[in-house]
Structures are given as structure tokens and as C-alpha cells.
Amino acid sequence: MWEKFASLFRVPELRKRILFTLGAIIVFRLGSFITVPGVDKSVLQQVFNSGSGGIWDWMNMFSGGALQRFSLFALGVAPYINASIIFSLLVSVVPKLKELQQQGREGQRKITTYTRWATVALAVLQAAFTIAVIQQAVSNPGILFYVTTIVALTAGTMFLMWLGERITENGIGNGISMLIMIGILSRFPANIGQMVSDISNDPVRLGIWGVVFVVLLVVMVAAMTIIQQGQRKIQIQYAKRTMGRRIYGGHTSHLPLRVNQGGVIPIIFASALLSLPVTLFQAIPGLTQYLYLIESGSPLYMGLYVLLIFFFTYFYSSIVFDPTEMAKNIREAGGFIPGVRPGDPTSEYVTGIMNRLLLIGAVFLSVVAILPYILYQASGIASMFLIGGTSLLIVVGVGIDTIMQIEAHLVMRHYESLTKSGRLLGRRS
Image 1 (spheres, one colour):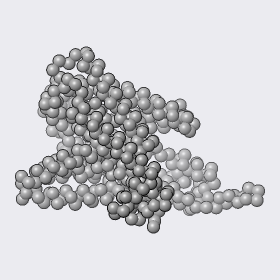
Image 2 (cartoon, rainbow, N blue to C red):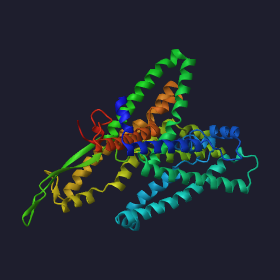
Image 3 (spheres, rainbow, N blue to C red):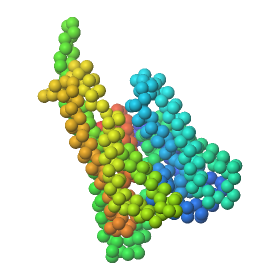
Image 4 (spheres, rainbow, N blue to C red):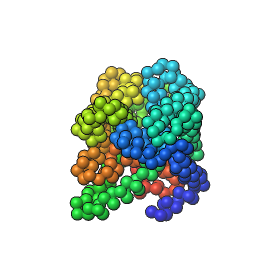
């Protein structure tokens, strides 16, 4: 095992990429502890605790706890993620953006520019909203405080966006996803320490839950890895074509359909949408008494959570995957699915398979989303939220992507695979 890890630093390019990524992570973590001037941390902590369960917690998760400290990176990369998701959806419905996407690298460069400007606008709006929430933690909030804080928070988000792009270009893995994963992982030690403290205070009752936590954590990570990598391969046969003295085609390929087509996006959308009514119920005095109906972990909350996950799973798939267009491309390339006629029958066949896969993916995401709430209510240990939910799914997904990139560098230079079988890249020993 140690020999395999040592091989990571024998490849000069891979060694530089790993060290660059580690350096960028250090800069990110240092910046998350630089607090914006003029904020009373003790009052800020009270404000944060009073907003438990709403959009405040959701934003704090993606910033790695930086929002709770109100640091320069308090907004994290959430504005950039939101802008990217918005434009990925708009590309499918706005003809001008779709035309740009089809222009190759130049068109993608323009879409990236639009995304960056949208990130600035969303960061300014989110910074203003955040200041409005925590203004009671400021002794004398004046116009200068508002302006400087909005500029500081927006600049922090833009710096993280730039840092993420540099990691993608010069480091290992997707930079933005890497920053989100590191932010989530940074909170794990404190949560584990709290769980150990709870168990030590009541070892007889909570000791068994510690064992359950370890077992379920391993099972959930394994299940997430299987589902994230799971594919349904549809065989495609290409007919032979004779052009002059040459014969083209006649080979077989596969159309891979992922089980979890939307990744973590359905859970993110569902949790973000549900956090809004929770925040409104907390902010409006007349609705506070009904907060128990919609608060995190309530039956109504979990029921709506599951329904929204199913909705966004199918909705997102319908945006990014078009069976009709896919069937058209296969037919134009001279291919067909054995036993299925080209055209509409092919589209219907793929749609039927895709719907079954989406059902499996939606059920799995629903279990991942609500399992932590059930375990927390049964055990009373807040660290049970580490077993599932958005955070663990992001960590597993980004971890798999990072390992696959490392594998690619090693295999390309004829080094032994980091994993025993090398199956993460689809090959076998």
C-alpha cells in the first residue's frame, strides 16, 4: 500500500499537481479563518444558533464553517455553483446559449464569461442578504460597513472561483468541487469529537450507536461508490458501409447510461428549496409557532424532501439528456440497437431504460437524504448526519473523481494502478 502511494510522487508532473493542490487547500483554509472586521463573534454565534435548520445551515455547509465565523470566504463558492447550474439549465432552453455551446471552445469561453459575471451579481446579492441577517452582531453598522463587507465577501468568492480554476488547470481534480469537499471534511473532526464526547457521557446507552455509526458509514460509502459508478450499457451495432475500396463500420460500441444521472444536484436543489420556508417561518413572528411542522426532521419536511428529490431527478435528466436527439445521432452514424428499429422505437426504448434507472437513483438519493434524520431522532447524536445527506455524497463523488484522475496519470506512465483492480477506470488487471 505504501509503495503505491510512494509512486504518486515518482511522476514529476503528478507530484507538482499534488503539491499545488495541497498548497491551494492550505490557502483556502487559512482564508476561512480571517474574520471580516466589525463583527462580534459571540453575538454572531447566537444569531447562527437561532437560525438552525434554515438556509443559514445550508450555506454554512458549503463554506466549510466559514460563514459561521463570517470570514472573507463566508460565501464560499455557492454563488459560482448557483450561476453554473443556472447557465447549464439555460443552455437547453435559450437558443443563443445553445448555439454558443455548439461553437466549441470559443463558444464555451463566452458562456464561462457570462457565468463569472453572474457569479459577481449573485455574490453581491448573497452578501447583502447575509449582512441583513447578522447585522445585530455589529455594534454600529454604517454605510461604510455595508459597502466594505459586500466588497470583501464578493472578492472572497471571486478569489475562490479563481483558485478553483487554477486547481483544475494545474492541480488534481475539479477545483471547485475540491474546495467544497475540503470545506465539508474540515467539519468532520469536530463532529466526530462531539460524538465521542456524547458516548463517553453515556456509554451504556450510546455505546451501541457508536458501533452502528461506524458500520453504517462504511456501508453508505460503499453504496454511494457503487451507485455513482453504476452504468447500464446499451449495445449499439454499426452497419458496414463500402466507400470505394474501403469498408467502414461493422463494429460494436456501448451507450453508457448512469444510474445516478443527476449526481448530487437533486439533493442540493431539494434541500435549498426546503430551507427557504424554514427560514421564513423563523423570521416571521406570526409563523414561529408553526415551525415544528416544517422544521428539519419533521414528517412533513421529510415527505416534501423525498418528493422534491424525485422531481428534480427526473427534471434534471430531462434537461441534460434527450433520447430523441440521441436516437437521431445514432441513426445518422449508421448505428442501431440490436432488436430495436431506428428512430422513434429507439428513443422509446432508451427512455424506458432511463426511467427505470432514474427511479433507482431517486430512491437511493431519498434514502441518503432522510436516513440521517431518522438516525438522529433514534439516537439523539447529531454526528449521525455524517452518515448520509448532501455532504457525504459530495465527498464520495469528488473523491472518486480525484482517484480516477490520479489513476489516469499513473497508468499513462506505466505505473501500477493505485487501486488493486483498476476498475475505477473501467479496465481490469
